[in-house]
Length: 315
Image 1 (cartoon, rainbow, N blue to C red):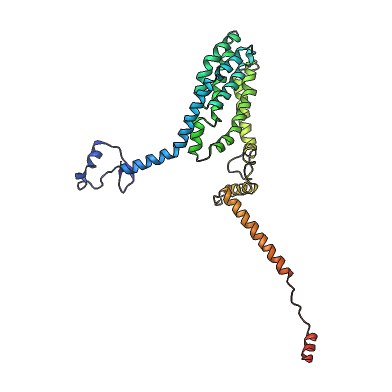
Image 2 (cartoon, one colour):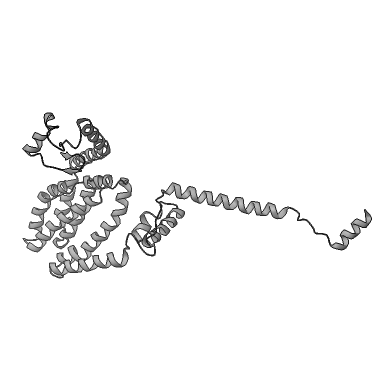
């Protein structure tokens, strides 16, 4: 409910609802009204549903894909790998990788946890001889691996909704965030699951080393979105440098530098940049061709005063 002319929203208190009655229009100075009419509400609802309809289809197919993966026996396959005489010290790493791959394939972290916990925890406890450190590390591996796989899965509900909210394609969203996830996965394995499984150092040491490596990666390898030099980080070069025209990427670098310096940047799509480049090339070619044609024309030769006098005498 809003107050016309003021733009303020009010709570639907009894006094406000009473002032909205038709016969109160002459007795109150400003009569409250609903923010949207029934027709506007229906139109907004249909517009919003049209924006997320594709996401609903993808999510439905993702859930169906997860059920198919469970039906064909992927969960039993992973459980068989663990129970076939695997070194217990590798179980935190194996559980981390297996849960990540399963979440990547099924698109759900909660579903992966619900599948792997009953299948992994009991064999882990018996194969490790009741080692609490191995057992808890395996639980942590399932939790973190499920979240990592779900984060970069193209059929995950969070991935689909994030791409929809940012108004980007699903493939572009996945390819740009997957390298960062893989870096964190590598740090987790090198400084977390493997050393903890072999009792190389306490958990807090692994967490501290992981934080240090993450900060080094962010502040040394990565670059700000608005960089003063317009340079890109390695993941952008790897994912996007191969799929875009070099002229568009050069224009993007120049626009980033202008944006950092506070200049106004005109937003252009890749096709517009390529069209502008084609037009500049065509104009340059026409200019060079005109200069060549102009140089081919014979230039008029100026006659000397003596030649002019001679011509007048002859005449």
